Length: 138
Image 1 (cartoon, rainbow, N blue to C red):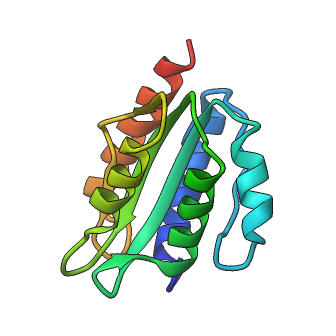
Image 2: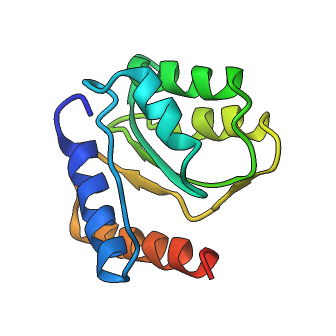
């Protein structure tokens, strides 16, 4: 998260998942070691990646994590995408393209787009994503 708004959205989603009895672990890629995030990604069946759009692409720290996951052949996972972008959110599309090139990755189509900060309309989108993740676990 560059300004904290993407992190806030991720925290809201994590709380919604925990309310449904789903254990969550979060990493802030702007401060966590890439190797720690990569290692954890191999421990869970379901992953959510949230990133802001940055200079017409994915926030650089998240782009590094995704490149490492691809290099380490992450596969057989269910992935959800959350993007944040005030003017031109592109991170979600670009993250989906990266995951599309990986083996046996199920991308949940109900991604979430945040336009700067979470607003009331996105609360419903975050709840829908939490529901989709919960139903895919069963």
